[in-house]
Amino acid sequence: MRRVTLPSGIGILLVVVLSGLSSPGSATAKTQSVPPAQAFRVDLEVSGDASVMLVDPRGRRTGWEWHFVRDIPGCRLDAIGDEIAEPTAYTFHFARAAGSYRLDVKPRTDGEVTISIRASGRAGHACDGHTSRTVSADSTCWCRVSWSVTGAACRARVSDLIDTSQVSDSK
Image 1 (cartoon, helix red, strand yellow):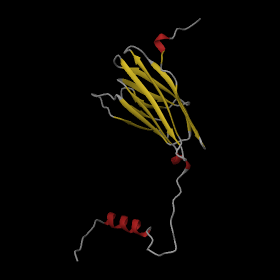
Image 2 (cartoon, helix red, strand yellow; image 1 turned 60 degrees about the vertical axis):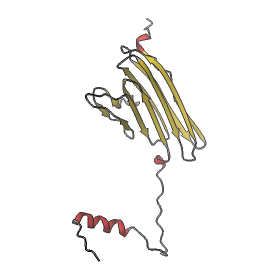
Image 3 (cartoon, helix red, strand yellow; image 1 turned 90 degrees about the vertical axis):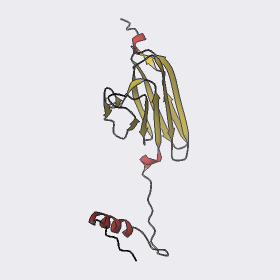
Image 4 (tube, one colour; image 1 turned 90 degrees about the horizontal axis):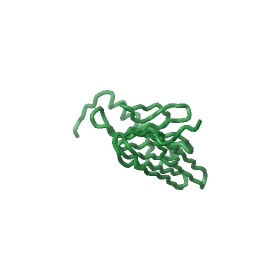
C-alpha cells in the first residue's frame, strides 16, 4: 500500500465530495432538479470585421467597443480579441425564455456582417433567425434581436440590419 500526503485543502475537498455519495443498496437517492432558467438556451452569433455591442432595454451593454464590456446580467460573451487583434466573431449566450435587445454594429472595414440566433427550450423545440448585409466601414448599423420559448412554441427573430447613415431625418 502506498501512502500519499495531500495538502489540507484537498483532503477537506475530498471529504466534502465523498460525503455526498451514497453506498450501493442504500435507500437514499439524491436528485437535482434543473432550475427553469437552465432549461432554455439562446446563442446569438455575429461575424464580420466590426465592433459589436448588445444593448438591453435598460441601456446595459455587452460586447466590444475599444475594450470588452460585460454589463448585461445573464449574458455570457465569447469573443477573441485584444488591443491588437479586435474580435471578428462574437457569440452571446443566454439561459432565459424570452428577450429583446438592440444590436449595434460598427464595421471596421467594408464587408459582410452576418447575424444569427438560435433558441431552444425544455422540450427540445428550437427556432432560428438570420440576417446578413454588406456594410461599409464608415457606417453605423443596428438591428433588433428577440426570442420567446414557451411550451411547444419557439420564436427567434433578427430584424434587417439598418444602416443609420442611410436613414434621413424627415422634418
